[in-house]
Length: 400
Ligand code: PMP
Image (cartoon, rainbow, N blue to C red; front, side, top):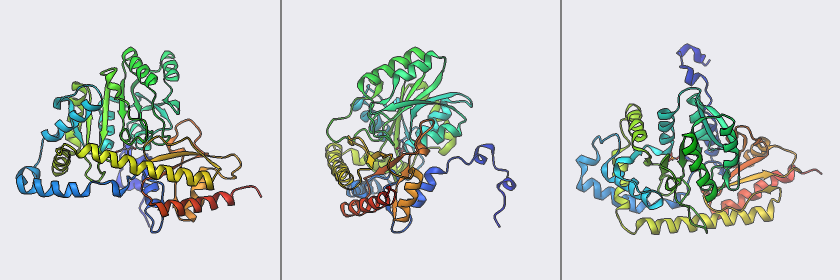
C-alpha cells in the first residue's frame, strides 16, 4: 500500500501538488499507438540533426576540455553573444552583459518569477495562458490577475481599467506571437499601449515568445522592448532548434538579469556547457538561421493548412480562427455537440487521439468548450487518420 505523503514531511509547496496537468497530458499522449495532437512538441523533422552532429564533431575535437567543463552561471560567452545578437535583430540593441543563458524558457519563467515575485504579489496574464506559466506563478503563491484576450492578444484596455482600479501587478506576462493555446498575435497598438502602461504603473513585462519565428505569411513583429526597457524577454530555442538541449536565452534590464543569475546559481549552477557550445557552433554558420527558419515556416504552414482543410471538410463542429503561425489550433466545440471539452478529450483518447481540453489553461474564463490541437508532430497520413477519428467522436455526440 502506498504510504501517505505526510509521512515524508513534504514542504508546503509540494503538498499543494498543483503542477500535474502537463505531466498527465504528456503521459496520455505517450501511450503506445496514440496519435498525439496534445503536447507542444515540435516536429522531429524540424531538428537540424545533421548540423548538430557536425557541431558535436567540431567542438569535441577542437575544444573538449572546455566544452565538457563547468562554465559561468550566466552562460558561455559564445552563447551569450548569440542571444544578444538574436535579441538585437528582433528588438532593441542588446549586449552580452544583458544576456543570460537559461535551461529552457521554462527555467527563465521560474527565475524571473522568483526574482520579482513575493508570495501574495500580483501577476497579470492573459486568460487563457500557457499552462507552464500559470503553474509557475501559482507555485510562487502569486495572486493571478486574469486579463481577457481576443485574436489581438491580451486586451490592454481591460488591463488599464484594472490598473486604474488599483491593481498593481509586479509583472505582466504575455506570449505575443501565436499564443499558446489561443494562437493570438498581440497587435502593434496593444504592444505600444502595454509598454506605456508599464512605464506609468511600474511593472515588468515578461515577453515569452517561443513561436515568434514560426509565422506563415505575415512576418513577426519586433519585441516590445523597442517601446520600453521594462521588458524581460524569454527567448526559447526549443521550437526553432530543438527542445532536448535545454538551451535558451533571457535578456532584460541589467539589475534584473543580475538578480536572476544569482537565483540561477542556486538552482543549477549553469546551463549545460556542451549544449550551449553546440547551439553557438551551429549558429556560427552564417547562412544557417535564415535557411533553417524558411524550412520550418513552410513545414508548419503545410501542416496547419492540411489540418485546417481536414477539419473544415470533416468536423464543422470544431470552430477556430485561421492559423497564422505557431503549432496550435484553439477550437471551440459547437453548442450542438452534447459533450464538454473534457468528455471530448476522453472520447478522443478512447479512439486513440490525444487532445488537450481547454480548462487547465484558463484562470477565470470558461474553457470547458475549448480544445487545443497541435498539428506539429503528426505526418500527413496521421493527420488524416486523427481527424477521421475525431469526426467519429463528434458524430457520436450529435443529437440523433
Ligand atoms: N513558453 C511557452 C509559451 C511555451 O509554449 C513553452 C513550451 N511549450 C515554453 C515557454 C517552454 O519552453 P522551453 O522548452 O524553452 O523551456
